[in-house]
Image (cartoon, rainbow, N blue to C red; front, side, top):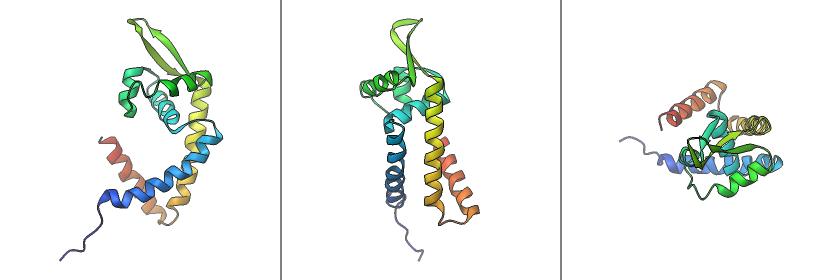
Length: 139
């Protein structure tokens, strides 16, 4: 009889909780919320988006992210401009400052992640991250 293993969610959840706990102080140090970081990441990956497309990309309700967008715009991290094709819609773009903040935050978060992964052999770390990336990209 094969040895039973826990469900994937049961194995991943404690790790995800730990990673989020490590991310929060990094985000706070840069005055960016978790949603704000998600917005900056999405806009850095695809520079111009409508609010609706952004909300869909990060899995948020359009109305839920308005406050986050306001905060990011006030901080000079994003810009909102009228869409020439639809004046009711706004196009979002990341500013150079927003790009710097996002990249600095990512670098600091990934340094924290390395601490969590130190229990794995270096080759296993690379494999683990590669497989997670493949699963992420498949979604």
